[in-house]
Image 1: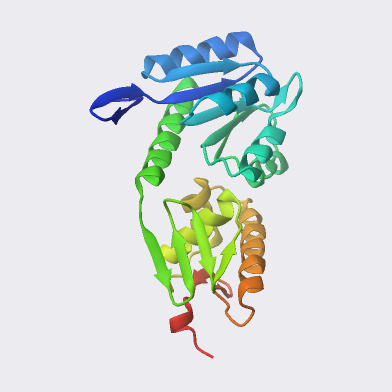
Image 2 (image 1 turned 180 degrees about the vertical axis):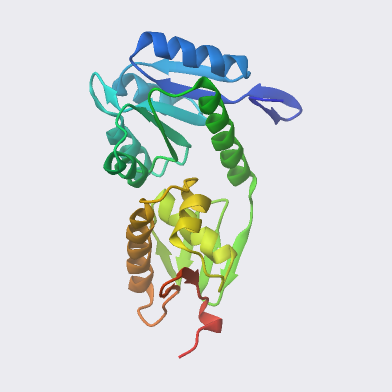
Length: 244
């Protein structure tokens, strides 16, 4: 059944916030989301969106970039900095590679360029909600010698120090740690962690890997947990299997 989740035997609609000031487009999107049995709130400004985000539990945010009181990317950055993990897709007419990369690095999970087809919007919304639900249902802890990664609390401890990671840095570390010693190309990581598989955005992976490495090295400079395999990609190398 589309758009619903079970809570204590009761079926509740998944809740989406649409932030879009173009009224005709907003009506069309809302009509299609409700046809999939999703519950939809609509805001036309960043201020209205923040009020809804603060007072309601959301499963997905669809956000226009150019809003009357600012750029949707600003709100995306604020949410990620505050540790809010709700999936977020940017809707925008800005279609340059630089704009897409900017949105992804701000913490967006997807980026849909206007004009878009309703069928594509529906497919991407379903995919983001499925991914978000799967992540929420994962309750497990990955432990290595000196490193603990809790996927339910999204907490990382490395060599007795708590690590503060952005949402995307955590997702990247978790994915690599689930496949220790397996080498992934930048394109594979982009698709697995960001949900993108487009050429040209690989440097987004590079920048996140570098920031993740820097934070891990502060906990233990002698351990190189995320290794570069030159000409191929990256791998997670647990302390107990590292060679010297």
